Image (cartoon, rainbow, N blue to C red):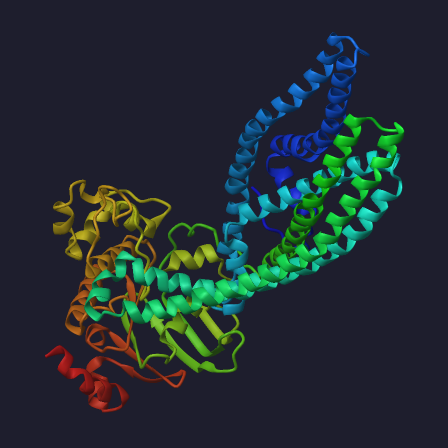
Length: 595
């Protein structure tokens, strides 16, 4: 299996990568697009000259009619060549499919192995988005550019070689004016990539607004709040900004290329005029004259546009390779893509001892010497205001971050000594922004236990959460596809999606279940009821409820109040109410929600 390596990627990797994936298709494309196609114009010059000269001699009575057969066959051969280009389209498509299958999978695998800090960092996420957006197309485009560049060099060189034999100074003059064009193209190529990077920031935001304006998930609120015109202005602003950045760059590039290209046109006309002298003296035939003039004039768009475009694209590709190098160098989390280990014994005690933590790239301490202990088969609630650090604790427990001070111990063993597979087998989490997998319901729930998911294990969570009644009304029962991407799929209500996410957690064999405010969209009473259902379904397991609404805290065996990065209070609901501290004050402020 191909892997994105931590090394420096260069322009030649545009050939090495496809060659390692699909050598046969690469060789065919290089032979046809890089060599054969490039030599065809030169041989066409000679074939055309031979045909015209032979035809003239026949009409003048200087040659037999049968002498025209070979030139005609040559001309027909070049005409039939056009049909081969259609067949080569299949070769190119096959190579693209192979690149998509292998290289895109390698990029996806690398993304899955990245340390979590890169996901939450805007700068590295922009890098990940640039590399991960159609990576197979980027490599395919770079490969085609290399082949095209080689082909253009052969094509231009062969025509210039013929010219050199007739007008020795013509190729020198043409190249003298072409080199500045190529240097200009290289410069604008780098500028184009930088412009694309800048535009991508606005494009990503515009895409989000477009999704809100057109997506099915937002249709009710679009109608209710009537925010379409406001968001449309924001979408239009981001889109036009990105469009303006790209168009400004393209206009500048086109004007520079066109202005410089006019000089090359004049040189081509000059060469054609100079060829009149050897034509008049009989040094070259009419056929060769016509072929050389046609080829020389044909060089103008090749040099001005084709060659400068591929030069521009090659520099653009070099910048992509630099991004790929940076992407390959991003730190990984060992074992990130490993399956959860076989079911591990429930730990008797999980302890956070004097833990302090700040998110990478910031100096703001989220946790400040926090200490607490969690014991098996007990239900805990972490409460506190938004931003207190409740979710941060779960990120440390599950190994998403390990750049903390202090110790996290599981039965006395440092959590850093556990593998990712072991940590995955210990914890099952439902986050506030849980995923809505648009697959059959049984598969959506079954993702909670990817090692072994017998269908009968799904029935229990469905019944506990009250989803069994909804399932019984579905046409295909638990095999019914969720979402509208399937013809027979059904959409669920917000509450039903939440229950599916919780069911996914319940089928997990992990001994510690965590609910990180997945019910925040529910009203407080419904949230409290759902937490109670979850507690009952997890009666033989340890649970952590994370919330800033305290209805769930009443059913916990112990409550931890997180404030200012520490555990400021802990105890049962009754003990904390009797204490009359932060918890009691928060609960009294929310009491009306549960009346």
